[in-house]
Amino acid sequence: MNFLPIEIEEYIEKYTQNESDVLTKLNRDTYANVLQPRMIAGRLQGQILAMLSKMIRPKIILEVGTFTGYSAICLAQGLQTGGTLHTIDINEELEDMIKKYIRKAGLESRIKTYIGNAKKIIPDIAGPYDIVYIDADKENYSNYYDLVFDKVKPGGFIIADNVLWNGNVVKPESEMDEETKSIVKYCKKVHADSRVEHVIFPVRDGLMVARKK
Image 1: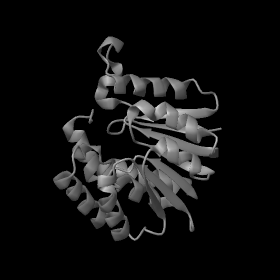
Image 2 (image 1 turned 90 degrees about the horizontal axis):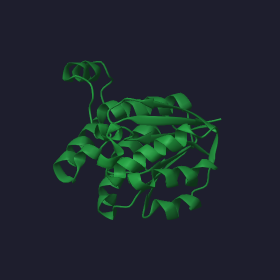
Image 3 (image 1 turned 135 degrees about the horizontal axis):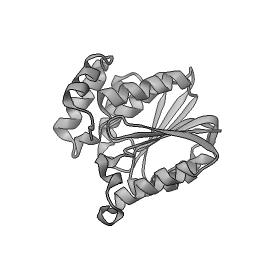
Image 4 (image 1 turned 60 degrees about the vertical axis):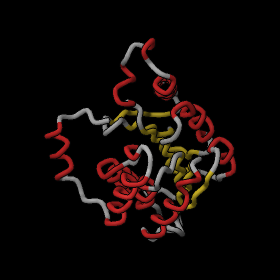
């Protein structure tokens, strides 16, 4: 996932604000007990998400893909008073862990969790959304974009993770798997959408940030 020289990565980590004790424990717990722990946002990306949220000051955040709750806890740091983060994951085995760390972070009144198929759940979550963070099954990125777009407020943001997909997005199409093709399709879709301004941040595995005009 990392494309920078290790010395630069270490320098960035050295001068990036430390994560909270709760996030440190969640990171360790994830790596010790959960399959594919590298899916966790981690310290650098988590601090970037927290900073973006604090800059935007959202009232409503929708997250598609909770995993163990690290990114939800980070994004919730910028919520306005009375704001809510809605986060959806399909893996019911992670529900207890997610709720445990949300509670430890003191955010149980600000983060609402959902377990199930996001395509079925999203239509029932009222907007307008200030931020949508997409970090779930790559094959449905474009579908999630379409599902949320009308409920994103003008000036709101759609942020998609993993848009560099470990560098696989620049391979010849004949060598791409379906997940990679879906990521490229998503990037092309956003790039062609005149309703948004957009940029890819080469952070970790790539964040595509689209701002609705």
